[in-house]
Length: 147
Image (spheres, rainbow, N blue to C red):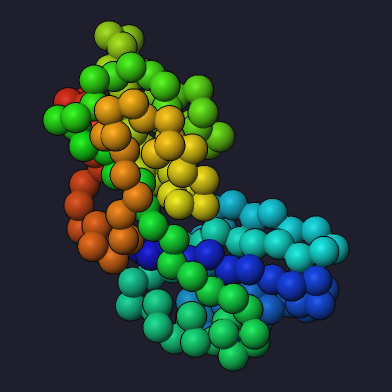
């Protein structure tokens, strides 16, 4: 699955653009987060890898701004589990285990649309990386997989 960020203008909000693309392409689109009001907004969504090009093209043909946000990756060798990132994560993608080990859940992370943890990490163990380079990597965690 690939994450895409869709940005809608005030004029586009009342139009059923996302549902049109889903129906036209018969592509499943999982909405991760959405922040839309009458002034515009954005949707962070996941789509199957093989549908990326045609889905992006369909949204762009409807004048929707589309970008592929970077993912957040944790270097487990650099992380010393200080916990600075845990309290800042708005989607609880970063938690602490009973023993104080930081656990990172890539599936919950909204990536570069937030990146609060990247800026907060004193060890610089958390970085934004290109999504397409990390599609096949497993979730990074500090020695323990997420439960």
